[in-house]
Image 1 (cartoon, rainbow, N blue to C red):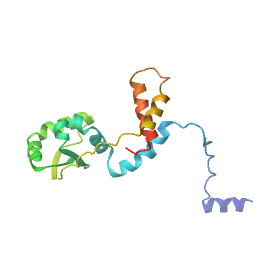
Image 2 (image 1 turned 180 degrees about the vertical axis):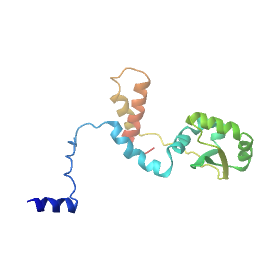
Image 3 (image 1 turned 90 degrees about the vertical axis):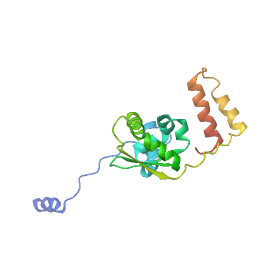
Image 4 (image 1 turned 180 degrees about the horizontal axis):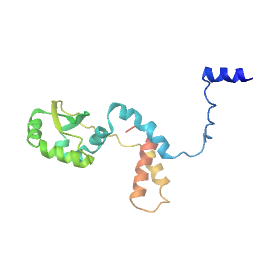
Length: 168
C-alpha cells in the first residue's frame, strides 16, 4: 500500500473539488451579483474612469461645451482625448488648466495630466421615441399604491422603459 501512496503524490493528483454553494434558479438574486455581468462589456470598451467621464461630462464641463465636445479616451499616462470642432478646440486649449482641475476634482484623483484634441464633432443627439401609451398606463398603475415622491417617480420611469421594450 505504501508504494501506491507514493505514486499518487508523484502524479500530483489535485485535491478534491470544493462543493459549490446551492444556486437558486427561480429565487431572487442580489443586485450586486448582476452588476459585473452588466458592466463587463462597457469596461472592455472604456476604462471605468472614462465611462464616468462620459456619463458626467455635461456636469463637469458645462452644458454649452458638452454639446460640442465628447471625451473619447483616457490613457494610463493621463492623457484625455476630447473630440470637438476646431473653434472649440482653441477655446478648450485656453481653458485647459481649468478643465483638468474640474475633471480631476470630479474623479477625486489626478487622472488627467494632459488634454489632446481631435477634430471630430460629436453626433447630434436624437430624441428618444416616446413610450407606447399602454406602457405608460401600465407603469402608472403599477406604482399607484406607493406614496408620491421621487422614489415613486423613478420606479414609474423605470417601469415605462422596461414595459416599452426599448433599449437605452
